[in-house]
Length: 280
Image 1 (tube, rainbow, N blue to C red):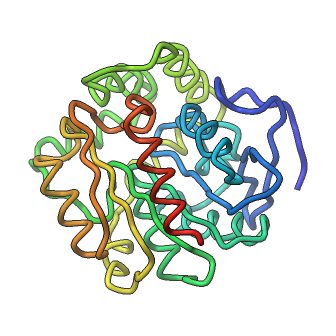
Image 2: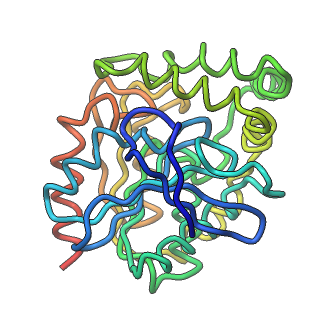
């Protein structure tokens, strides 16, 4: 483990800590010295600063909060051979062990699948799950749309396409620092090796997460924006995931794929309440 100056964008500490893994390093921040551990994982193409409006509320409520960058994202290395749900799940378990967990895992988008896999793999390290806009299965989509997405995210134009696409994932209210955060994402993807790592991440299958759903018994909260464009029927998908895991659902009216960042005034109180009743 070592430390370095962070350039991953707003909402992170001045100093980034790195966790060594077999093929590279995972970057993370830690807020708080005591209290139950919560580890937050961003979605594909995002940064750990996605949780910039979440961490203060959790820390003020007495939790120790770690936020991590996915492989090939933000300040994490691009030297890995795998960038899928299982790889991210193994990284978060390693971080929980390093920080002397167990922990509640908060996962957005593909990281929700990683969190599910981790909870099934080592249930003793996972106290609970918060799944935001969760991809825990391969959601059916128009085959032509799938081909378009694969091509759009495969070439040197992938960074521009992704950054241009991001506003559609936040169709409702956006925080005042939204454009600053989007610029940080663009800058991250422009770093050497990051575009290729991002492309590899976009090809992730969520089948390994779906295969482990019935093996998860930890308390779960599913948070979904009612206008999340990544799902044909966001409310139905949220109920499906919650039913499979025996969990609760919070629907955030008007929110898209990032309700924790765009509607923290709605998400944070529910998240704190869930954490307090889950970690006793």
